[in-house]
Length: 372
Image (tube, rainbow, N blue to C red; front, side, top):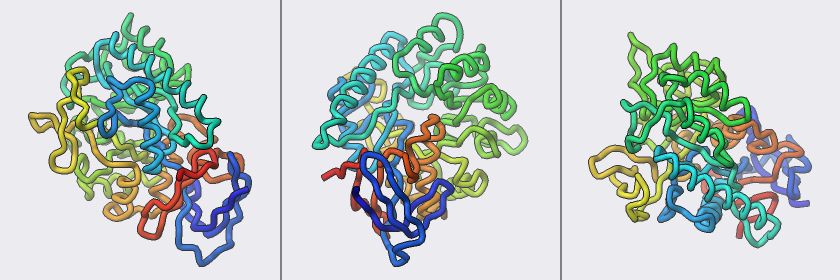
């Protein structure tokens, strides 16, 4: 059994000095020992929205390339993730889903090899095509209403784990209920919805708000929108891109103070840069001003890691390290209903990170195996 000593991040956002014993899963957590610990032990981060990284774009990546991306994410401390497809013709989305399913199977087969340590692929996040024409962001205009044959085809996608949709569309509330029933997490985003429309979708089963504030009608103090619904106490978590560009640090702090760490998920909405081949809707994005942007200046996603987001929430939004770990690991696992991930408790999967006092990444363990 391996043992790590440090300040252990707990599932309530606190930290406690102690020792974690683990193999493939966590076997013991001894709190109250090692009081002079300075390193943090936190659960491996879970990123619910990754469009790509480096030169690998989810929209045109092969299964092998997605597995390569899993390896690179693990090196950054992200131990599980959702490859994210954006609004496209349904035929294209179906092809991407097939590649992700193939990559998931390939990753599971490789997991037995302790020399091959990679982030787990948890399924596909489909961001669209059921989004508002008024809030496309960087998405192409292939948006559809969530009903009829289009909804049937999306519901039949292999490995669908999360879908972002706009709750104001015709058929949206019924789609939320229908998609949630088989275990798909519905998130609200790319939306022009009012407060009431967003709250109705949460009541119907939606469990998250996608990149809160971005690609949403702005917060209005007289006519509250979906952004207000994300800020209010809710059964749905507010996901946010904490890069300091998509959302100003002061607004990150406002969201943190309003929802508390227990109501927020950190995601990167990361995109590939330099992967342009004409096949991806985001293929022309470049880095400018600290984020990915389309040629006309529209934000297209971030270029940060989950650890970068954790640092920003601690250093600029005022969260504690334990709270940031809650937002980056525990809450994303809860959104997906994964009780065995995102927590440092006996029986959980031993996906663990060791962070130094300045939040530098010192060690990564996936399924109990240390990444060299």
